[in-house]
Length: 191
Image 1 (tube, rainbow, N blue to C red):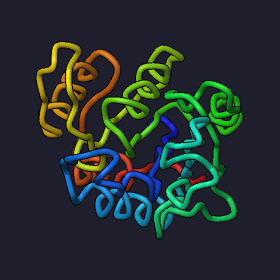
Image 2: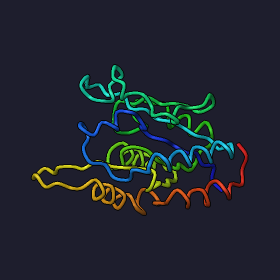
Image 3: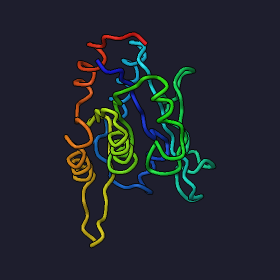
């Protein structure tokens, strides 16, 4: 079995700013992410964390804002690396790939915010680097989007569209429960 890790992307307080982001889908995403974190920790499987550091001083994820902080419960433990990024991909400007390679990780279980931005970009790059990727559909979420032509797409439509674009080409799309069965409960290796 491939050595897998959980990669948690951008679960930061700034994403709670409804006035800035608007409508969001999947209100239980964080609950599912915490379920995965607990399961991986209890099984002594590796967890990697990513935090977005916006360069826009007005953005909720700028380091001078409260929104930059990780949400409660998402703080890394001592042996869980944290990678700070300023673009959509967790691989750009960080040592994520080198750390994954150094630890012999071949499979990434990815969850976080937001499905169509940083999660999607990281999934695509991970697949292009040759990692296997499992994207947890009920442990990610998206926000409503206005298209180039003014058409409004609901948060759920944005989420489903992003997952559809990644499915079978860049990642397998799994639920939290499916990840627990496939990658945690059936784990055949010890870290």
